[in-house]
Image (cartoon, rainbow, N blue to C red):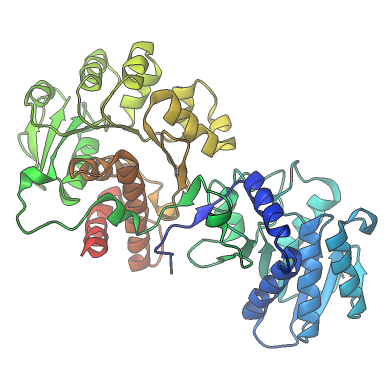
Length: 501
Protein backbone atom coordinates (compact mmCIF):
# COMPACT_ATOMS: atom_id res chain seq x y z
CA UNK A 1 0.00 0.00 0.00
CA UNK A 2 1.34 3.45 -0.93
CA UNK A 3 2.58 5.55 1.98
CA UNK A 4 0.07 8.16 3.15
CA UNK A 5 2.76 10.40 4.56
CA UNK A 6 5.60 12.21 2.88
CA UNK A 7 9.07 10.74 3.36
CA UNK A 8 12.38 12.66 3.33
CA UNK A 9 14.65 12.30 0.31
CA UNK A 10 18.38 13.07 0.43
CA UNK A 11 21.06 13.52 -2.20
CA UNK A 12 24.23 11.41 -1.95
CA UNK A 13 26.26 14.18 -0.35
CA UNK A 14 23.62 14.52 2.37
CA UNK A 15 23.54 10.76 2.99
CA UNK A 16 27.32 10.89 3.47
CA UNK A 17 26.87 13.70 5.98
CA UNK A 18 24.27 11.64 7.85
CA UNK A 19 26.66 8.68 7.90
CA UNK A 20 29.38 10.86 9.43
CA UNK A 21 27.02 12.19 12.09
CA UNK A 22 25.85 8.66 12.91
CA UNK A 23 29.40 7.36 13.16
CA UNK A 24 30.12 9.88 15.91
CA UNK A 25 27.33 8.60 18.16
CA UNK A 26 28.81 6.86 21.21
CA UNK A 27 27.95 3.18 21.54
CA UNK A 28 25.96 2.99 18.31
CA UNK A 29 25.88 -0.18 16.21
CA UNK A 30 28.08 0.33 13.11
CA UNK A 31 25.87 1.23 10.15
CA UNK A 32 27.21 -1.62 8.00
CA UNK A 33 26.17 -4.18 10.58
CA UNK A 34 22.74 -2.60 10.98
CA UNK A 35 22.26 -2.41 7.21
CA UNK A 36 23.34 -6.01 6.72
CA UNK A 37 20.91 -7.30 9.33
CA UNK A 38 17.99 -5.25 7.96
CA UNK A 39 18.68 -6.47 4.43
CA UNK A 40 19.06 -10.08 5.54
CA UNK A 41 15.70 -9.94 7.30
CA UNK A 42 14.06 -8.56 4.16
CA UNK A 43 15.75 -11.29 2.11
CA UNK A 44 14.40 -13.90 4.53
CA UNK A 45 10.87 -12.50 4.01
CA UNK A 46 11.29 -12.83 0.25
CA UNK A 47 12.75 -16.34 0.44
CA UNK A 48 10.38 -17.90 2.93
CA UNK A 49 11.33 -21.46 3.80
CA UNK A 50 14.90 -22.35 4.76
CA UNK A 51 17.27 -24.18 2.44
CA UNK A 52 16.66 -22.07 -0.67
CA UNK A 53 19.56 -20.95 -2.87
CA UNK A 54 20.91 -17.43 -2.63
CA UNK A 55 23.54 -15.75 -4.80
CA UNK A 56 25.11 -12.69 -3.14
CA UNK A 57 27.09 -10.21 -5.24
CA UNK A 58 29.62 -8.12 -3.32
CA UNK A 59 31.38 -5.19 -4.94
CA UNK A 60 34.60 -3.32 -4.18
CA UNK A 61 33.15 -0.69 -1.80
CA UNK A 62 31.03 -0.48 1.32
CA UNK A 63 28.03 -1.80 -0.58
CA UNK A 64 30.08 -5.00 -0.83
CA UNK A 65 30.57 -4.88 2.93
CA UNK A 66 26.80 -4.76 3.38
CA UNK A 67 26.56 -7.79 1.10
CA UNK A 68 29.09 -9.76 3.21
CA UNK A 69 26.95 -9.07 6.28
CA UNK A 70 23.80 -10.24 4.47
CA UNK A 71 25.50 -13.42 3.27
CA UNK A 72 26.71 -14.28 6.77
CA UNK A 73 23.26 -13.88 8.31
CA UNK A 74 21.53 -15.92 5.60
CA UNK A 75 24.07 -18.72 5.92
CA UNK A 76 23.56 -18.83 9.67
CA UNK A 77 19.83 -19.05 9.03
CA UNK A 78 20.39 -22.20 6.96
CA UNK A 79 20.04 -20.83 3.46
CA UNK A 80 22.40 -22.15 0.77
CA UNK A 81 24.50 -19.08 0.04
CA UNK A 82 27.10 -18.54 -2.69
CA UNK A 83 29.02 -15.27 -2.73
CA UNK A 84 30.69 -13.58 -5.70
CA UNK A 85 33.24 -10.93 -4.70
CA UNK A 86 33.98 -8.58 -7.60
CA UNK A 87 36.70 -6.54 -5.97
CA UNK A 88 40.09 -6.47 -4.23
CA UNK A 89 40.03 -7.19 -0.51
CA UNK A 90 43.22 -5.16 -0.04
CA UNK A 91 41.29 -2.05 -1.04
CA UNK A 92 38.28 -2.61 1.21
CA UNK A 93 37.47 -0.25 4.07
CA UNK A 94 38.09 -1.47 7.59
CA UNK A 95 34.39 -2.20 8.16
CA UNK A 96 33.98 -4.02 4.85
CA UNK A 97 37.10 -6.11 5.46
CA UNK A 98 35.78 -7.06 8.91
CA UNK A 99 32.52 -8.14 7.30
CA UNK A 100 34.41 -10.26 4.75
CA UNK A 101 36.35 -11.96 7.56
CA UNK A 102 33.08 -12.67 9.34
CA UNK A 103 31.76 -14.35 6.20
CA UNK A 104 34.83 -16.54 5.91
CA UNK A 105 34.75 -17.42 9.60
CA UNK A 106 31.20 -18.69 9.10
CA UNK A 107 32.58 -21.19 6.57
CA UNK A 108 31.65 -19.19 3.49
CA UNK A 109 33.69 -19.12 0.28
CA UNK A 110 34.08 -16.35 -2.28
CA UNK A 111 34.02 -16.77 -6.06
CA UNK A 112 35.12 -14.53 -8.89
CA UNK A 113 32.06 -15.42 -10.98
CA UNK A 114 28.72 -17.12 -10.35
CA UNK A 115 28.86 -20.92 -10.48
CA UNK A 116 27.69 -21.99 -13.93
CA UNK A 117 25.08 -24.46 -12.71
CA UNK A 118 23.64 -22.22 -10.00
CA UNK A 119 19.92 -21.51 -10.25
CA UNK A 120 19.29 -19.19 -7.31
CA UNK A 121 15.94 -18.41 -5.77
CA UNK A 122 17.24 -14.96 -4.81
CA UNK A 123 20.07 -12.70 -5.94
CA UNK A 124 21.30 -10.04 -3.51
CA UNK A 125 22.88 -7.12 -5.39
CA UNK A 126 25.66 -5.54 -3.35
CA UNK A 127 27.92 -4.60 -6.25
CA UNK A 128 27.64 -0.81 -6.27
CA UNK A 129 25.59 1.50 -4.08
CA UNK A 130 25.08 5.24 -4.09
CA UNK A 131 28.73 6.12 -4.64
CA UNK A 132 28.96 5.00 -8.27
CA UNK A 133 30.46 7.86 -10.30
CA UNK A 134 31.14 6.38 -13.73
CA UNK A 135 29.41 4.11 -16.24
CA UNK A 136 29.76 0.38 -15.69
CA UNK A 137 31.65 -1.50 -18.37
CA UNK A 138 33.85 -4.53 -18.96
CA UNK A 139 33.55 -7.37 -16.49
CA UNK A 140 31.05 -5.56 -14.30
CA UNK A 141 28.73 -4.96 -17.25
CA UNK A 142 29.03 -8.61 -18.29
CA UNK A 143 28.24 -9.79 -14.76
CA UNK A 144 25.15 -7.57 -14.60
CA UNK A 145 23.99 -8.81 -18.00
CA UNK A 146 24.30 -12.40 -16.76
CA UNK A 147 22.30 -11.61 -13.62
CA UNK A 148 19.60 -9.78 -15.56
CA UNK A 149 19.01 -12.95 -17.56
CA UNK A 150 18.22 -14.94 -14.42
CA UNK A 151 14.50 -15.37 -13.79
CA UNK A 152 14.34 -15.01 -10.03
CA UNK A 153 13.79 -12.44 -7.31
CA UNK A 154 16.56 -9.84 -7.12
CA UNK A 155 17.11 -7.67 -4.05
CA UNK A 156 19.28 -4.55 -4.40
CA UNK A 157 21.10 -3.11 -1.40
CA UNK A 158 20.58 0.67 -1.19
CA UNK A 159 20.03 1.08 -4.96
CA UNK A 160 20.29 -1.17 -8.01
CA UNK A 161 23.88 -1.31 -9.27
CA UNK A 162 24.34 1.05 -12.20
CA UNK A 163 21.59 3.53 -11.25
CA UNK A 164 22.75 7.04 -10.39
CA UNK A 165 21.46 7.70 -6.88
CA UNK A 166 20.90 11.41 -7.48
CA UNK A 167 19.31 11.32 -10.94
CA UNK A 168 17.87 7.85 -11.62
CA UNK A 169 19.92 7.57 -14.82
CA UNK A 170 21.32 4.24 -16.02
CA UNK A 171 25.10 4.50 -15.97
CA UNK A 172 26.05 2.35 -18.92
CA UNK A 173 24.07 -0.63 -17.70
CA UNK A 174 22.17 -1.49 -14.54
CA UNK A 175 20.99 -4.51 -12.63
CA UNK A 176 17.21 -4.82 -12.87
CA UNK A 177 16.17 -5.54 -9.28
CA UNK A 178 12.67 -6.63 -8.36
CA UNK A 179 13.06 -5.29 -4.81
CA UNK A 180 15.30 -2.76 -3.06
CA UNK A 181 16.07 -2.05 0.56
CA UNK A 182 17.57 1.40 0.85
CA UNK A 183 19.44 2.54 3.94
CA UNK A 184 18.99 5.64 6.13
CA UNK A 185 16.58 7.44 3.76
CA UNK A 186 15.24 7.56 0.21
CA UNK A 187 17.45 8.79 -2.61
CA UNK A 188 16.15 10.62 -5.71
CA UNK A 189 17.46 7.96 -8.09
CA UNK A 190 15.06 5.42 -6.61
CA UNK A 191 12.05 7.54 -7.49
CA UNK A 192 12.57 9.31 -10.80
CA UNK A 193 13.62 8.71 -14.43
CA UNK A 194 14.74 5.05 -14.82
CA UNK A 195 15.13 4.31 -11.10
CA UNK A 196 11.67 2.85 -10.44
CA UNK A 197 12.04 0.41 -13.36
CA UNK A 198 15.27 -0.95 -11.87
CA UNK A 199 14.66 -0.64 -8.13
CA UNK A 200 11.00 -1.52 -7.61
CA UNK A 201 8.02 0.69 -6.87
CA UNK A 202 7.72 2.65 -3.63
CA UNK A 203 4.29 1.31 -2.80
CA UNK A 204 5.24 -2.38 -2.95
CA UNK A 205 8.87 -3.38 -3.48
CA UNK A 206 10.98 -0.52 -2.15
CA UNK A 207 11.69 -0.56 1.57
CA UNK A 208 13.47 2.06 3.68
CA UNK A 209 15.59 0.87 6.61
CA UNK A 210 16.41 3.95 8.69
CA UNK A 211 18.98 1.98 10.75
CA UNK A 212 17.70 3.61 13.92
CA UNK A 213 18.41 7.16 12.74
CA UNK A 214 15.97 10.04 13.04
CA UNK A 215 17.29 11.69 9.91
CA UNK A 216 15.06 14.78 9.98
CA UNK A 217 16.44 15.76 13.38
CA UNK A 218 20.01 15.17 12.21
CA UNK A 219 19.99 17.06 8.90
CA UNK A 220 17.29 19.18 7.31
CA UNK A 221 15.98 17.65 4.10
CA UNK A 222 15.35 19.84 1.06
CA UNK A 223 13.63 16.96 -0.74
CA UNK A 224 10.64 14.77 0.07
CA UNK A 225 8.03 12.58 -1.59
CA UNK A 226 4.49 13.63 -2.32
CA UNK A 227 1.77 11.72 -0.49
CA UNK A 228 -1.93 11.65 0.26
CA UNK A 229 -1.39 14.06 3.14
CA UNK A 230 -0.69 16.78 0.58
CA UNK A 231 -4.46 17.07 0.09
CA UNK A 232 -4.95 18.44 3.61
CA UNK A 233 -1.90 20.64 3.25
CA UNK A 234 -3.52 22.25 0.22
CA UNK A 235 -7.17 22.50 1.35
CA UNK A 236 -9.29 22.29 4.49
CA UNK A 237 -12.78 20.82 4.78
CA UNK A 238 -15.40 23.37 3.81
CA UNK A 239 -17.61 24.98 6.45
CA UNK A 240 -21.35 24.56 5.98
CA UNK A 241 -21.74 28.30 5.43
CA UNK A 242 -20.04 28.19 2.02
CA UNK A 243 -20.93 29.48 -1.45
CA UNK A 244 -19.43 29.19 -4.92
CA UNK A 245 -17.67 32.51 -4.60
CA UNK A 246 -15.58 31.03 -1.78
CA UNK A 247 -14.25 28.38 -4.20
CA UNK A 248 -12.92 30.84 -6.75
CA UNK A 249 -13.25 31.14 -10.51
CA UNK A 250 -10.91 29.48 -13.01
CA UNK A 251 -10.41 30.92 -16.46
CA UNK A 252 -8.94 28.52 -19.06
CA UNK A 253 -7.34 30.16 -22.09
CA UNK A 254 -6.65 27.78 -24.98
CA UNK A 255 -8.49 25.58 -27.41
CA UNK A 256 -7.35 26.84 -30.81
CA UNK A 257 -8.74 25.24 -33.98
CA UNK A 258 -8.52 21.44 -33.77
CA UNK A 259 -7.48 21.53 -30.09
CA UNK A 260 -10.67 22.58 -28.29
CA UNK A 261 -10.68 19.28 -26.39
CA UNK A 262 -7.54 20.26 -24.48
CA UNK A 263 -9.20 23.33 -22.98
CA UNK A 264 -12.39 21.37 -22.27
CA UNK A 265 -10.44 18.69 -20.38
CA UNK A 266 -8.72 21.34 -18.26
CA UNK A 267 -12.04 23.03 -17.57
CA UNK A 268 -13.84 19.84 -16.62
CA UNK A 269 -11.02 18.89 -14.27
CA UNK A 270 -11.10 22.31 -12.61
CA UNK A 271 -14.85 22.10 -12.13
CA UNK A 272 -14.93 18.55 -10.74
CA UNK A 273 -12.04 19.29 -8.36
CA UNK A 274 -14.09 22.00 -6.70
CA UNK A 275 -13.69 25.40 -8.38
CA UNK A 276 -16.82 27.52 -7.89
CA UNK A 277 -16.99 28.70 -11.51
CA UNK A 278 -15.03 27.70 -14.60
CA UNK A 279 -14.86 29.76 -17.77
CA UNK A 280 -13.37 28.66 -21.09
CA UNK A 281 -11.89 31.31 -23.36
CA UNK A 282 -11.52 29.38 -26.61
CA UNK A 283 -9.26 30.62 -29.40
CA UNK A 284 -10.93 28.66 -32.18
CA UNK A 285 -12.66 30.71 -34.91
CA UNK A 286 -15.83 28.65 -34.54
CA UNK A 287 -16.30 28.00 -30.81
CA UNK A 288 -19.18 25.83 -29.58
CA UNK A 289 -21.91 27.57 -27.60
CA UNK A 290 -21.66 25.15 -24.71
CA UNK A 291 -20.09 21.89 -23.61
CA UNK A 292 -22.98 19.43 -23.78
CA UNK A 293 -21.02 16.93 -21.69
CA UNK A 294 -20.42 19.52 -18.96
CA UNK A 295 -22.94 22.37 -19.41
CA UNK A 296 -21.82 24.04 -16.17
CA UNK A 297 -18.74 25.31 -18.03
CA UNK A 298 -19.22 28.90 -19.21
CA UNK A 299 -17.84 29.63 -22.67
CA UNK A 300 -16.54 33.08 -23.50
CA UNK A 301 -14.30 34.68 -26.06
CA UNK A 302 -10.74 35.15 -24.79
CA UNK A 303 -11.28 38.91 -24.73
CA UNK A 304 -14.42 38.55 -22.64
CA UNK A 305 -12.55 36.29 -20.25
CA UNK A 306 -9.80 38.85 -19.76
CA UNK A 307 -12.25 41.67 -19.20
CA UNK A 308 -14.74 40.01 -16.82
CA UNK A 309 -12.72 40.88 -13.74
CA UNK A 310 -14.05 37.80 -11.91
CA UNK A 311 -11.26 35.31 -12.69
CA UNK A 312 -9.28 34.35 -9.60
CA UNK A 313 -6.90 31.91 -11.39
CA UNK A 314 -5.88 31.71 -15.04
CA UNK A 315 -4.89 28.37 -16.61
CA UNK A 316 -3.20 29.15 -19.91
CA UNK A 317 -1.91 26.88 -22.64
CA UNK A 318 -4.07 23.78 -23.20
CA UNK A 319 -4.48 23.59 -26.98
CA UNK A 320 -3.53 27.26 -27.26
CA UNK A 321 -1.30 27.21 -30.32
CA UNK A 322 1.54 29.67 -30.86
CA UNK A 323 0.03 32.21 -33.26
CA UNK A 324 0.45 35.96 -32.71
CA UNK A 325 -2.99 36.36 -31.14
CA UNK A 326 -2.10 33.71 -28.54
CA UNK A 327 1.11 35.54 -27.70
CA UNK A 328 -0.77 38.80 -27.17
CA UNK A 329 -3.27 37.10 -24.87
CA UNK A 330 -0.47 35.58 -22.85
CA UNK A 331 1.22 38.96 -22.56
CA UNK A 332 -1.95 40.40 -21.00
CA UNK A 333 -2.50 37.45 -18.67
CA UNK A 334 1.04 37.71 -17.36
CA UNK A 335 0.23 41.24 -16.26
CA UNK A 336 -2.88 40.14 -14.36
CA UNK A 337 -2.50 40.19 -10.58
CA UNK A 338 -3.97 36.71 -10.00
CA UNK A 339 -2.38 33.24 -9.67
CA UNK A 340 -1.46 31.67 -12.98
CA UNK A 341 -0.61 28.22 -14.28
CA UNK A 342 1.18 27.89 -17.62
CA UNK A 343 1.30 24.67 -19.63
CA UNK A 344 1.90 23.41 -23.17
CA UNK A 345 1.91 26.16 -25.82
CA UNK A 346 1.97 28.92 -23.22
CA UNK A 347 5.36 27.57 -22.13
CA UNK A 348 6.58 27.39 -25.72
CA UNK A 349 5.55 31.02 -26.27
CA UNK A 350 7.45 32.07 -23.15
CA UNK A 351 10.51 30.11 -24.28
CA UNK A 352 10.52 31.94 -27.62
CA UNK A 353 10.13 35.47 -26.23
CA UNK A 354 12.52 37.41 -24.00
CA UNK A 355 9.70 39.90 -23.36
CA UNK A 356 7.38 37.20 -22.03
CA UNK A 357 10.18 35.71 -19.97
CA UNK A 358 10.81 39.08 -18.32
CA UNK A 359 7.11 39.58 -17.64
CA UNK A 360 6.82 36.12 -16.08
CA UNK A 361 9.84 36.53 -13.82
CA UNK A 362 8.59 39.91 -12.54
CA UNK A 363 5.07 38.80 -11.59
CA UNK A 364 3.99 39.49 -8.01
CA UNK A 365 1.15 36.93 -8.01
CA UNK A 366 2.02 33.20 -7.80
CA UNK A 367 2.91 31.32 -10.98
CA UNK A 368 3.09 27.57 -11.64
CA UNK A 369 4.85 26.08 -14.67
CA UNK A 370 4.17 22.47 -15.74
CA UNK A 371 6.62 21.57 -18.54
CA UNK A 372 7.47 18.15 -19.86
CA UNK A 373 11.22 17.64 -20.46
CA UNK A 374 11.25 19.04 -24.01
CA UNK A 375 9.36 22.17 -22.92
CA UNK A 376 11.72 22.57 -19.96
CA UNK A 377 14.67 22.36 -22.36
CA UNK A 378 13.21 25.18 -24.47
CA UNK A 379 12.64 27.33 -21.38
CA UNK A 380 16.26 26.89 -20.30
CA UNK A 381 17.89 26.86 -23.74
CA UNK A 382 19.38 23.40 -23.36
CA UNK A 383 18.78 19.88 -24.67
CA UNK A 384 16.10 17.46 -23.50
CA UNK A 385 18.89 15.02 -22.65
CA UNK A 386 20.46 17.61 -20.35
CA UNK A 387 17.12 18.09 -18.59
CA UNK A 388 16.69 14.36 -18.04
CA UNK A 389 20.27 13.98 -16.86
CA UNK A 390 19.62 16.38 -13.96
CA UNK A 391 15.89 16.52 -13.28
CA UNK A 392 16.05 17.99 -9.78
CA UNK A 393 18.57 20.65 -10.77
CA UNK A 394 16.49 21.52 -13.83
CA UNK A 395 13.31 21.99 -11.81
CA UNK A 396 15.14 24.17 -9.29
CA UNK A 397 16.66 26.28 -12.07
CA UNK A 398 13.25 26.76 -13.70
CA UNK A 399 11.73 27.85 -10.40
CA UNK A 400 14.50 30.34 -9.67
CA UNK A 401 14.84 31.76 -13.18
CA UNK A 402 11.13 32.38 -13.62
CA UNK A 403 10.19 32.95 -9.96
CA UNK A 404 7.56 30.26 -10.21
CA UNK A 405 6.77 26.85 -8.79
CA UNK A 406 8.03 24.39 -11.41
CA UNK A 407 6.58 20.95 -12.10
CA UNK A 408 8.95 18.94 -14.30
CA UNK A 409 6.72 16.15 -15.54
CA UNK A 410 7.79 12.57 -16.23
CA UNK A 411 8.39 9.40 -14.26
CA UNK A 412 8.76 10.76 -10.74
CA UNK A 413 7.69 14.34 -11.52
CA UNK A 414 9.73 16.97 -9.69
CA UNK A 415 8.01 19.90 -7.98
CA UNK A 416 10.44 22.71 -7.13
CA UNK A 417 9.66 25.73 -4.97
CA UNK A 418 11.28 29.15 -5.01
CA UNK A 419 13.44 28.43 -1.93
CA UNK A 420 15.34 25.48 -3.40
CA UNK A 421 13.12 22.83 -1.84
CA UNK A 422 11.77 20.03 -4.02
CA UNK A 423 9.38 17.10 -4.03
CA UNK A 424 9.35 13.89 -6.05
CA UNK A 425 5.96 12.51 -6.95
CA UNK A 426 5.41 8.92 -5.87
CA UNK A 427 2.11 8.24 -7.65
CA UNK A 428 1.22 7.37 -11.24
CA UNK A 429 1.84 4.64 -13.82
CA UNK A 430 2.66 4.18 -17.54
CA UNK A 431 -1.01 4.41 -18.48
CA UNK A 432 -0.64 8.17 -18.15
CA UNK A 433 1.41 8.31 -21.36
CA UNK A 434 -1.55 9.41 -23.43
CA UNK A 435 -2.93 12.61 -24.94
CA UNK A 436 -4.62 15.15 -22.69
CA UNK A 437 -3.05 14.11 -19.38
CA UNK A 438 -1.24 17.42 -19.00
CA UNK A 439 -4.46 19.35 -19.68
CA UNK A 440 -6.24 17.52 -16.86
CA UNK A 441 -3.32 18.19 -14.50
CA UNK A 442 -3.44 21.88 -15.39
CA UNK A 443 -7.13 22.02 -14.53
CA UNK A 444 -6.60 20.20 -11.24
CA UNK A 445 -3.83 22.54 -10.06
CA UNK A 446 -5.82 25.60 -11.19
CA UNK A 447 -8.83 24.40 -9.20
CA UNK A 448 -6.78 23.96 -6.03
CA UNK A 449 -5.27 27.44 -6.51
CA UNK A 450 -8.74 28.93 -6.96
CA UNK A 451 -9.88 27.38 -3.68
CA UNK A 452 -7.06 29.07 -1.80
CA UNK A 453 -4.16 26.61 -1.85
CA UNK A 454 -0.67 28.09 -2.05
CA UNK A 455 1.24 27.55 -5.27
CA UNK A 456 3.59 24.86 -4.00
CA UNK A 457 0.84 23.08 -2.07
CA UNK A 458 -1.51 23.18 -5.08
CA UNK A 459 1.18 21.82 -7.40
CA UNK A 460 2.17 19.03 -5.01
CA UNK A 461 -1.41 18.01 -4.27
CA UNK A 462 -2.44 18.23 -7.92
CA UNK A 463 0.46 16.13 -9.17
CA UNK A 464 -0.05 13.46 -6.50
CA UNK A 465 -3.81 13.38 -7.06
CA UNK A 466 -3.34 13.11 -10.83
CA UNK A 467 -1.11 10.06 -10.47
CA UNK A 468 -3.15 8.49 -7.67
CA UNK A 469 -6.29 8.70 -9.82
CA UNK A 470 -4.44 6.87 -12.59
CA UNK A 471 -3.33 4.23 -10.09
CA UNK A 472 -6.92 3.76 -8.95
CA UNK A 473 -8.04 3.31 -12.55
CA UNK A 474 -5.25 0.86 -13.30
CA UNK A 475 -6.34 -1.18 -10.30
CA UNK A 476 -9.91 -1.31 -11.58
CA UNK A 477 -8.97 -2.47 -15.07
CA UNK A 478 -6.07 -4.65 -13.88
CA UNK A 479 -3.43 -2.74 -15.80
CA UNK A 480 -2.44 0.65 -17.19
CA UNK A 481 -3.18 0.16 -20.89
CA UNK A 482 -5.94 2.25 -22.41
CA UNK A 483 -6.41 4.83 -19.65
CA UNK A 484 -7.64 8.14 -21.07
CA UNK A 485 -7.11 11.59 -19.59
CA UNK A 486 -10.79 12.35 -19.05
CA UNK A 487 -11.25 9.18 -17.03
CA UNK A 488 -8.96 10.51 -14.28
CA UNK A 489 -11.31 13.29 -13.25
CA UNK A 490 -13.91 11.18 -11.41
CA UNK A 491 -11.47 9.09 -9.32
CA UNK A 492 -9.48 12.24 -8.55
CA UNK A 493 -12.63 13.88 -7.18
CA UNK A 494 -13.30 10.81 -5.04
CA UNK A 495 -9.74 10.76 -3.69
CA UNK A 496 -9.85 14.45 -2.82
CA UNK A 497 -13.11 14.11 -0.91
CA UNK A 498 -11.87 10.98 0.85
CA UNK A 499 -8.76 12.82 2.00
CA UNK A 500 -10.64 15.86 3.30
CA UNK A 501 -13.74 14.28 4.87
